[in-house]
Image 1 (tube, rainbow, N blue to C red):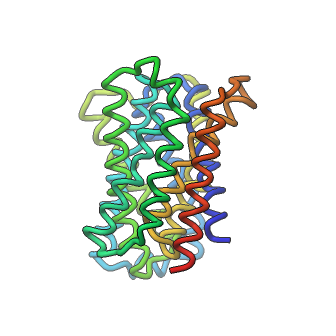
Image 2 (cartoon, rainbow, N blue to C red):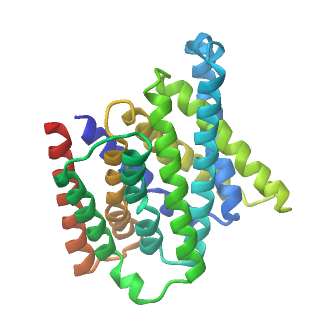
Length: 285
């Protein structure tokens, strides 16, 4: 059941490119509003139900949560900017190579041991995601956009690994995500101001799209990832994210009549196979 909940979270996160397509503001501004709205929406609940836990948060725990938020802000910023420069499918696949970095990081830094079948499942899932994007890859996406997506993958892996340490230290999902989103918003705000980018004065549609990202993609998506880090291996969370391009293809078909080709369908089947294999292997451990 926990694995299914995480996959539902991936489905909500996959709405991000849809909201991005309807937006007109710069990527950095959209990220700022997205995580800023998420933090603000959590504030009443935190003050009513978790005020005591927030006050009792130790300095080390606070710093780790904030560190995770910095990486999340950088992850969003790099990914959103890559969507401006390369294809959606390409960006989604490259940013989700995070699974490889997380798996390696889990072994190196968290001293986790993964069975050979788990490594095989990660590889199968990644290959499936690459197949999904082959049509766009054939079009030769911008090198800068591809590199930004890869940077987003590295930042996302760091966010996931630090988040694993935070969640297994006993911090509740609510407090962790609350500090996480505020820290991410502050990170993006500093970068935007330092680069001279205006953070206000854009069309109203951007408020609606970023609010949608905050509710669906962040609170119902990334918060589910944060919840899952307490109960599931970080490598599974990262691997599950690789199904995002498949969901994105479905949204493209339903909302923009973008019909997936045979490669997308075949790659999607491979991705689902990889996720299923990884779930079975990790549950048996």
